[in-house]
Length: 531
Image (tube, helix red, strand yellow):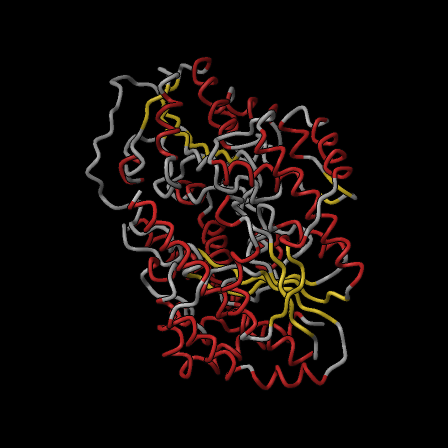
């Protein structure tokens, strides 16, 4: 009882009341953006920028610049939208966001669209439940649209992430609740857009239920600007204009076309940079282009690999985290990553001329590795590799091929002339150094005729270098990003500090030195994307 009381006390204190640093940050913003506040008070225009009311301080700091610079340029108001991701007893009342509303108000953000204000009536709940009852399969859920706008994949991924489930459970009451909320959010957003002149949307996420507003915006030709980050929004800060596919990615489907526009000197320098990226990575050095990987996956590991003593060729399955945003790209052969894993486990029994190995990603969410271990116990035909086994050790197995959906292993193993099969849309889709079957039928055909299809792969290193440059350098450094801003402007090197208000103190102290460069970078982006 004593522990519960103090647990509740600290939760209440941290989420509902401003601490000293947060109060200082509010004063800091009031002073910094007061010019825009005075200007907005004199304006009668009602055009609006909508920004996500999302509690993550590195993003909030970046947004404060972005929305105010847009507002100053176009003399339009700034309002927030809010949808709560995890619904629980603790966030069941609007007081839950009272603190963050005060912080956003300090940089001129008024209330806009707030899920706490949504009113459900019995008729619409009954209507939404009837629609939900028509969803009889995972595939039908994934294809679910309203007014020709796809939201089924967002519902699907929200269930996996919030429920920490490896796959969809169609009769689960939690799924029904998410489905009903999604429809309500959709219609409320649509109604809000019809009543107000929304010119820009600045979301925290393009996935999960958060993604609904961005998809409606794009359908209505409203510009969506996103601060793209990695490693829990602690690194790789960059601005992107979201296109019709509504992906939190650089336009990988245009890499080849864009590269072909370069002149000869640009191409030579680009290939040199791409070569440098992959060579440094496979040496086992820390790779800043993969900030979420704290240790090199090509380092020497202390894990011993169990290898069966036979002459069979090896196939390595690299599964993804089952409940972490499976539908991040445009399409997949399988409904989710669990179905992906089960398919290959079952196939291993038929294709027993190979030794099959299964190696989970080392950077999975909490509890995820246990799901992999539990699953693989059902399949004696597959060997489990510890998630910390290095690629250097796996390469010693001389794999016949490896299987991923969209992982970096696709270009990493292609660099060593190892055939790779991707089972969905992925960043390498423009290139021929991997196999990219379009459907399950084609995938099966490849697996039963590996020798034939592996010969079709082009391991020309130039195209691997080209991809690496486009993916890790060219787009990331647009708008003179590499000259003007650094990740340290927005976040602390210790990710755990960015979870708390400690990062605000760090940000405020260095703002005077970084402010001009942040403005220059954002203005470079806006000059290219406002019109």
